[in-house]
Length: 262
Image (tube, rainbow, N blue to C red):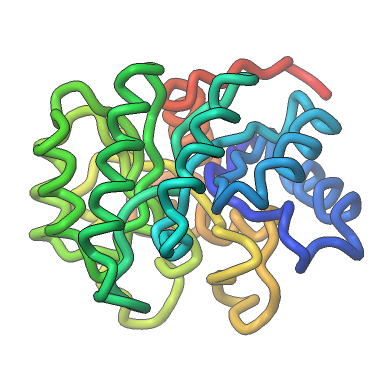
């Protein structure tokens, strides 16, 4: 079984003590590759280093996370843009708007988000979008910049059928499904019934949002198998079919090339 974890923070300090073992466990579970979302200029170096250490497993993204938008955002976005031109990145992300933690910086977040959307068009890269409590605002920015020229994924999709209906109109976008879908009474599991599997990629968001039965523990890429199991139940197909389809979806979206064997 081949699976790609399209969104994991295994470069974070939560993995400093056992990162090598985490990667080995992921590979043993069938995880063929992971994509690493950037947060700010401070995380670029470790993401780059990890992707160099594991060149056929860890694939870097770059971007400024909305919760990292502060008074110094102009300087920060400049540093990230400079880094973008130095090596290959596979997506602009994690970017977007977050109104859960702080609503006072909506204007700045929107400015930064739309600038990075323009980068993605110029560089022909997908975007990985964070839209916590900000779905309508994110959509507004996408249409402002040019929805027909953008492609990417709505990270950590836990939305309503109405939200999926709006995403469905964005033909070049997928939804990222992670551990939340395994939680009791989660609306996303019902919405999945409306979403073609061809529009789905799998993710963990490790170390966050561990799936059942690991909820409350540190998440890690090998747990993505539990997400695939839940989707297999919902779509009423074998888990290997979920893995294979989402694997191909991720390869295509992120333009990742993998060797057939490690």
